[in-house]
Image 1 (tube, helix red, strand yellow):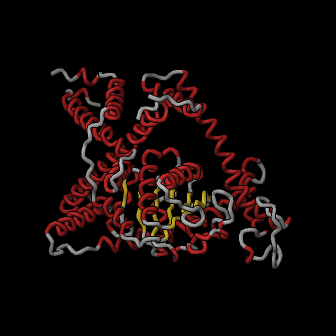
Image 2: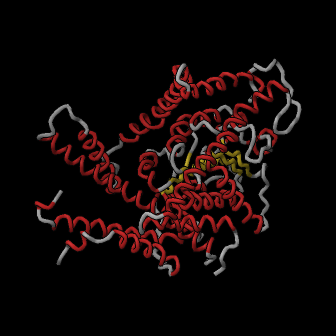
Length: 232
Length: 279
């Protein structure tokens, strides 16, 4: 046993134990850890956002454009074709437009002129709707439909069995979500079969979720035992 | 047998049992078998089949919240890639993740240094760090990695790095390796890059998102898949490593058996109750 002398590890270990103490019952130590986490996270992400999003993507390019000096390296920047030339890479004065749109998002906090915040929102929603739609069409719709059309008899008993189970599961699960007719007769049988397949998928999902959550617990225990207490 | 006692059981006993079942195997390992499954073997073999010196885009999209699942698989994947002298470009689209991704990368590089193998930053590997924009960054990278990431994690101009002259955009990449814990992650890389740019791809993800990605594996969009800590442990087994995922699998297995028993017991107690007593 070789207990850590690192203050950071001690803080992390004690906060971990404070959080675990909630499993016994709610208590001031847990509340302290909870509030500390919320406050530190909020502060950390605000600072992180400023230095990893606003500065490199907006302020630095604008400073480079209008001063001709790189704010990171302090080197002179050669600008051909003026600040609005698209050929000069990331230091384009065009960043003024997303900059203004970004500021307009905060107009919501002021009562009057709240409607102005809809413009940047419209741009965000429009761009992401376009990206998502084409991405989904490429990656999911076409590719998945194509992959679903498989031969039921492949010459190999096991793969053929898999293909049949897959096709039955696909068709019956889809039929379960067909609500234009009452689930009676053949449709009822198919829908009930579909439920079985859906239940199996929910069960698999639950099992994997348990695994994920246990992994976090195991990770914390490994931290306490190996990093904090130094037991290898 | 009086099952009503079970119904009134203080759940803290279950927490205690779960804690002990997770903790004890860490002190007294049971050595339960870890057998690699087909998706993990496919992940391993896809990398194994790459030529030496292949060009890799390594998208590490996670933060410290998913460390126990993501870090072991990232380390093992990097070791397999560096063993083949692959050149690796690492990116991160998770704001809180660039620190842990860089730390993991450097930990693996330090292992090689300790073995006398010098991996040179900027020539053999580079960490481009975090870039905000999710899918927009993925699409932008199609026009050139340098334009999407003008600076790397260490504030070097990426255009000045030798590795970036060879690995310029998706057409110059042999394989995309994604270790992703959620959004943006495997799904977005499949939708925006694998499908549009036809870039071969393998992925490692958290267990909770694994079922969502099996269709991509079945359709061949993903060449291999590591699912959670179990996937990481199977991968370590294939590489003959004994990392933190393997060490955690005994606890994982025991805890799963316990959860299954609790579900069975809960159902038995519920069924045994008089009908009038049911909610």
